[in-house]
Length: 163
View 1: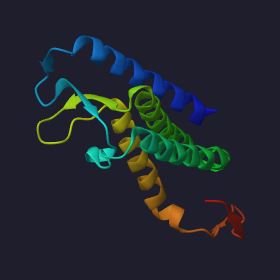
View 2 (view 1 turned 45 degrees about the vertical axis):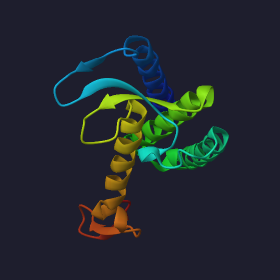
View 3 (view 1 turned 60 degrees about the vertical axis):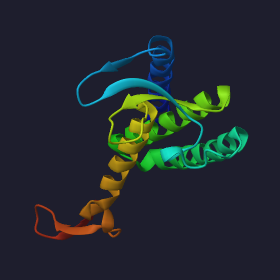
């Protein structure tokens, strides 16, 4: 349930931010120092790759990837900790928000501009942050060991404990 709630929250936040950006940034930009709010549209995927492909192809591919990840997260959720559930929800919510946005008019609305990185949106940030969190969780040494650790209980006798 936490994965679904996180995904829905992330998608709602991103789609709302996109709507506000389209309404408020159509003819202007806002300089916030390190980042500017500047409206842009991306017909491709990350870094505008695939921008020459028909929008329907990109929607189908990104929707399929999103569905596959959501199915994996659904099956993984009972064994996952809360950080992994929230991170998975962030990835799914960001992906779904971008698919929904692209399905409307063939492009993804971007509004966060740095000048040194391609313009992006909150969904992109949620996807990347969620993927990094999941990767870090799986990189932990205790995750690398798939066998139970042997420990001694109070009596000094060895027992088996789950990691």
